[in-house]
Length: 374
Image (cartoon, rainbow, N blue to C red):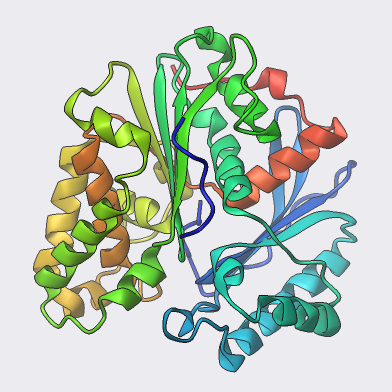
């Protein structure tokens, strides 16, 4: 299992490669953040603007870096070749925008692979990019701070869930002692670490990195032919992995003013399906609130479609149909354990967290202007 603390948004892929985004030239430094995950390679280039940032260019491509990792413990040559090709595209974008401030990170697949260090040397030789492997706690912290703008001012107990390709991070945060207007900013301050709570600040009750994401969970049960049986087994297996997470015991006594924020392609796809969007629209999805019952209805609809129906459903998309049921099994398990009327959908995640962290550190972002959701 990936490192975890003792008890105490992959973004939705709109196209195989997101198009170049042309913005008017403006003053100010450009920052880049790249997330090399188990399934996808994603990058944002952005400029700080007040307490937020403006995206200047973006890139997203499924590279399936973790394909075969579950069985071999190694990154395969074809997977590494696909990833290097995607990173060469990223390098050209960075050069075109003359970006010098950047952080490029790899997560679960590279944490687990026996040959990940060789792979990083290959990346450096072929692209010149300084990709680094981050640990599970930093990945969780970055996902948390990316979601700060979606924290409700009424929230006293917060669960942030980041469903990735190779792992799922869960962070339970106690905000009861934080002044309501300060709660989003208190979340941003967690970038400094989970173990050093400030008086009157956000307190991380517990966090966990479950070594199961949409790709790794699918791979473990790909030999099960029955669609509904496979879904039930994936859900049961994921719940087994939550037993050491201390807030698991809260399932029988849910606190008031509880909010879940979900960040992943699974969550945004379920939200788009709930809205009936045949073409993805981030402005309608990011920040949307869904109930456990609404999520259940969407997942039941996915199951009724079967594999062939999901493959052709425009709400799911051809790039995600093979991963949607493993992600749905994780999401439905979480909603069963901690049912809520307020799951906030976040089309944001590790990349946004990397950008926030860099900009705050350089003093070019004003977190004091951050406002939450009423």
